[in-house]
Length: 318
Picture 1: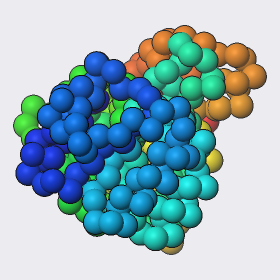
Picture 2: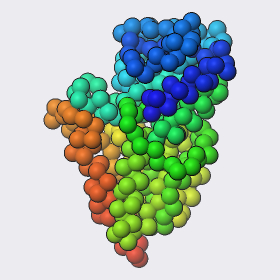
Picture 3: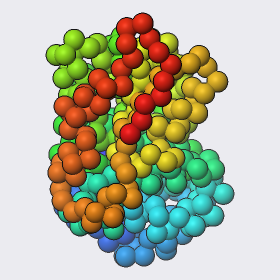
């Protein structure tokens, strides 16, 4: 996803001289194409994320389109007050790009986890929150937020995420994307775990369960109409996110469907308290597998939550 982002940003910067890039002393081997092509529009603010956001807000209020780039936890939580006061309150045209959402930097330990970021960012005024599911969505999301006037948060994976789409999907901010159709259950996903969710749907299909996958690249504002259509179609909606349960996609989906017809919901998310208490350290694959995010574990979780054919009203969660 990082490569898709920087390639797209370089192309856009060649078309629009308002585009700037700021980083917090990282991104080596990723950001060089932009630095070499547009050195006058690049600022390395150093390990000073609060200052980076302040500079970005100032440039944006002078008419620039400013992208900031940092590891997800540092670029959101360390400088949260500046994001709220300087960027959001002024509707400054700043695009906060976070690399390594979830547990992508798990080898560095839980100080580098970003499992609360979606909750925090979607609570801020005027903030559009985007978490693409694969490199294709990442490229399209970068284009979309560049032309969107206002604060945006773009949550990327780290590296090596497989492309899910055989053909480029139609991408609009605020709209969900159907990856595959299914009538028994719809797996609702956001962010870089999309490929795992698609594999889980294939595993369910092998068990005789018709599983659809609905990708939610825009977490806020949410595509309520797509969710309502999915709820009307399937017996179960399973929300899967590489994020803490509180304030994430699951909460947003539940709120969106609360005033509609009864819907059976199942939630699969990370338990950040357990991750921290256990001193979890390891690569992203290891940590996700341990947390029950392997495709088979996801599929088995869905099977346990599926209602009987005659149906029942319930809400299963984990």
